[in-house]
Every structure is written in C-alpha cells, then in structure tokens.
Length: 234
Image 1: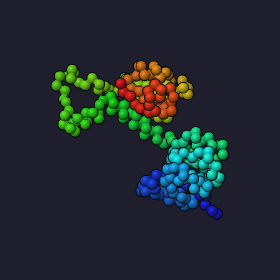
Image 2: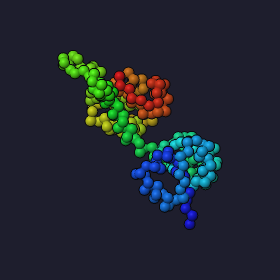
Image 3: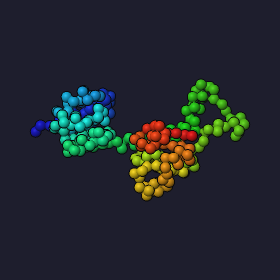
Image 4: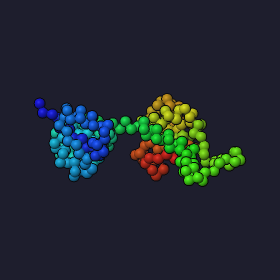
C-alpha cells in the first residue's frame, strides 16, 4: 500500500533541531515525506500538486489560486491561518487544522513580563547598574522615581479578550487589578467570570494605566492607538 504524500514546509532550523528529529522520523515511517523551506508561492507551487497533506507555519499563504493546483490535497495543518487560506480550503472540502493556541500561554506570560518591566522600570535600572550609573535612595521617599509603580491594584485594560487576553487575565488575578475589557464579540458573562468590566476603547484609553492590545486586527483599537499589538504603560 502506497504511503500518503506529506509535504512539511518549515524554516530549515526546524529540520535541524535535535529535539524534533524523532518527530520527523515518526512521520516518515507513516508517510512519504518531502521537507521544504519555501518562502514564496513560486517556490512552493511545484510541490502543491504532489502533496496529499501539508504541515506548515502560515507562509507563503496558500490562496484560492494555489488550491487549484493542489488537486490531491486533503489536509492542511498550520500553526496559524487567515481567511485568505481558510475560506478557499473549506470550500474545496479540505480539512483545515490550526494550532495557534499553542502559543497563547507564552504570549500571555510575555505580556505580563512587559507590564511589570514597564511599571517597575526593570530594564532601565538594570542598564544603569551594568553601566555603574545607578542612583540609590538617600532621602526616602522623596527621591524615589515616581514612574516606578507596583502592578497590584492598578487599572488594566485588555483590548481583545481571546485566548491571549484571557490567559493574561488569569496571570493578573493575584495582583488584584481593576480589569477593563473591550471585545465586541465577547459575551458579558465571560467578562464577569474574570471579574472584569466591559468598556469601550475610549474608556480604557482614558482610565487605565496599563493597556494591552491583544486584537491585532481590531479596527477600532488600531485607529485609536495606531498599532496592531502593543503594551502601553502610562
């Protein structure tokens, strides 16, 4: 019985990473595997008509035109995808799998790290200490940097309350922050479950000392803050 044809399109580093070798070996026992590191449509298209299944990140984004070439394709697994790929794939009856949520805990943790860094000025003080120019408190509390603040009890706004936003809310729980959320698709009951107040983007921008934008494509948020993803500490 012929093996199913599997195309794995990932950056070359994945194929060289020691911890992943056993994973690739397992796949190669079950499938006829081709490994590629294509970054453009021109590079990947010669392999599309061959593949029955594809594992890849999200680039080059497979388009409706590409699916016309991929006549044998039955399965497409990506780390994250967009409507440009998802809609034509589903119309073709191709099974589509996305593993974006695997990154959510790491991103939530990094958001908390950046919040604490912004409030406590960790990077600034670390650089000053490495350079030997740090200042020490002589007249407590008058010479303490007023911009250094604790997170506990602060007003924090999260714009976009999906997996990353909810993960961040979990991490913020011990800090007893006053949490405000903007997400037009979120049931209010979910916000209440996190002890959060549903707010508008304008309300969050006026009242919150810490603002985390977790909705990269949030049109209203992007217009207000002119950014796709950021953490702002006032």
